[in-house]
Image 1 (cartoon, rainbow, N blue to C red):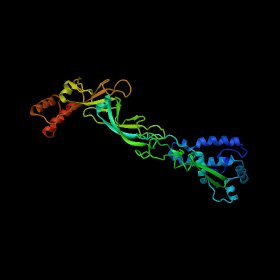
Image 2: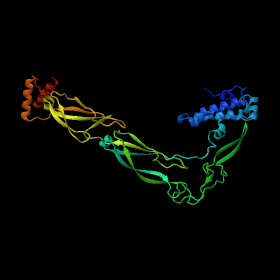
Image 3: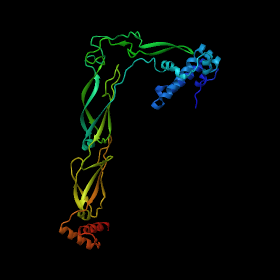
Image 4: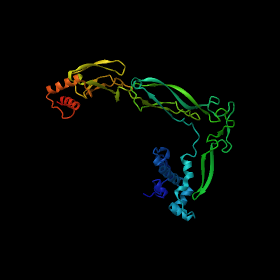
Length: 374
């Protein structure tokens, strides 16, 4: 949809609008379409273009002389042609945009950058929590100048290009008259003062790279891939700005016995055929290192799960623990002694399991499988 070239339409006003209505409409639209309010980078350019049009419309309609000229010609295009300016478009309002959008911003505090490191934990450390010592390299305030960037005992001096205002003004003429563009002074970065004698230790930057050791308390129940934020432990800020944050990415090593499923622990329990058929009492390990007895009833099937309540992973920053889930794995022997083979053959005859036409070993295993399927 084509955008209107009519300044009144851009501000949503009639040609009879008063100056008070023009001001109110501009404030409302400027707040609504200000690029600083746009969080989606894809919409940033469109927002800036819209804001330029709004600022241009207000710049003309809020000035009685410019408004009278504009009303005489009726539109931007007719006005441009009538005054000898061909090819007029809204792209020429960059200076107006700078003046409205941020050209007058004074230099202020700058927040320090965020940092990110990775640590690796043992399985048990993630389950029960621990305290880890980490090393982080970050920018800290210079110990010599205290972050000012100047040699100790020296003072900043007034910036000559801007005379201490922190702004540079440039007058530009266009079809609507003369405009004053105000932009931050680059030599002093908008501060109005400059460092005459830079600190020799940091080169005038005010910050130095240093390595630091930190003790981090890892909460019980932390998961693989979790991230912890240590507020204020990132790079130091500038001009009195706050420090950034340090983000700790956590990797958890796999356990040789236990598998984690949320707050539950899964323990594969391997039993032989006799234990599954006749029942047995076995010792199972706990994540805390203590073994405990578990009764495997007679006739326990492969894949059966025993659930031991409250013996899993502690809930992260909460009460209680998950469960320990014991999964039964019935192991079928791959090799048999002559005595074992004889016993299984007797069992097969007792269960009326037909023999296989394959080899002797295949016949034994088929009969075992058949016995369990029956």
